[in-house]
Length: 326
Image 1 (cartoon, rainbow, N blue to C red):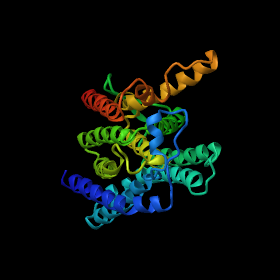
Image 2 (tube, helix red, strand yellow):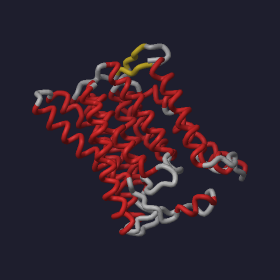
Image 3 (cartoon, rainbow, N blue to C red):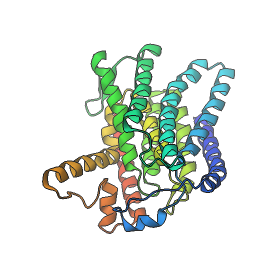
């Protein structure tokens, strides 16, 4: 527990320092947010706010995880040190793909950004590498925990691999859709990651508790600049990174199905988009005032802070329930 606390604090301080350095650079480069014309009118004033801030989290995580890796090797805990790498690779890999997309749109001024097919291919390749590495490199098996029944089931490997990849891609997309209000995605993600980290501690999986603590500190440090009114947005760089973290840990502790409980807010955000698109195609009308779901509540009169607080409190309660039912 002592090392986890130290890593959380160090990661938090590192992210804050990086934020103070990187945000002015993003401003200088004029890497500004582009708001939707059909979105909430209150968002138009955010036009030009620096985005691509997820780079703060990427650098902070690389620095702190590398430091912990060296420390653990020197302490003779090479097994735990090596087990940090797959989670870091998936997380940073997704973050880099998000960075390429943001960079293409905001710096190279290609409004379409990275081609969706290239983006999905990159995410798919990294997902496959992570899942195969878990199965072959760590021989972790295909056991998956059923929360309410409190049992593990063995899934045939030819079903497990596509299932695990679907979990990674689905989670990443859900966190990406949750990003749209100052501090929403970072707050909700921080709570979910905290729950997964606590479960890692309960199960005695030290690499998860260490990695999770580093990510929590990093996200909280970033949140210092991302709360309303945000001084920086995370962009796809940050949202894909956070989706990678959540799915990587959930699969590592063999509890991807628990995400249906603790990550219900991102799940509902995704469902709202599916309903909106399907309903519009069928009727020509909108089911929600606007999708994803957080924009619907904004357009009904909720302030941004109210949406963030309520969505975060719901996530907190669900995470407590999730920990209770394991």
